[in-house]
Image (cartoon, rainbow, N blue to C red; front, side, top):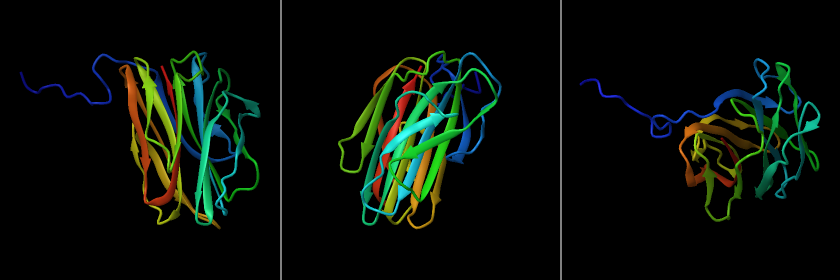
Length: 218
């Protein structure tokens, strides 16, 4: 019988995971709308920053209304005269319709961006698996539980900046940010995944130095 049903390869039939909503990319310190309060709402914050020196800053903390969430997964990389730092953390925020994410670094940065998602239907903000990677590291995979979702933030600097190609997630936002040092930053997610013991992760761009971090939830 026609028409035949068509299923996305990243949304297996019958797999219904947490509801993921991308809220956008903001400056560190902005107020972010996260929708209606809910007992099962987890907020994901992913940060990316660039500085005008080849040694990357350390991410000191990633805060939600001034309070810590999970310990951030973070890494950084540099090349030439610039470097990037990326990080990702989450927090169960059950009340209110907005929050302020703040990314603090070991020193000054030229640009600091924070991508935000919310997950509803998620009673724990503890990630199932976490991964970090930077240019020069071995390839990475991540473990996904049934009805799971994956979040990633990637950033690149030095050389010619261009759009990211993200493996393991779908791109939600990808932009260049200028100033004394320039950065390409991409934020991506995917949900409704079946269990996968080693889902491939990668972030490639025309920049000379790239880095990413990723989390899974289910």
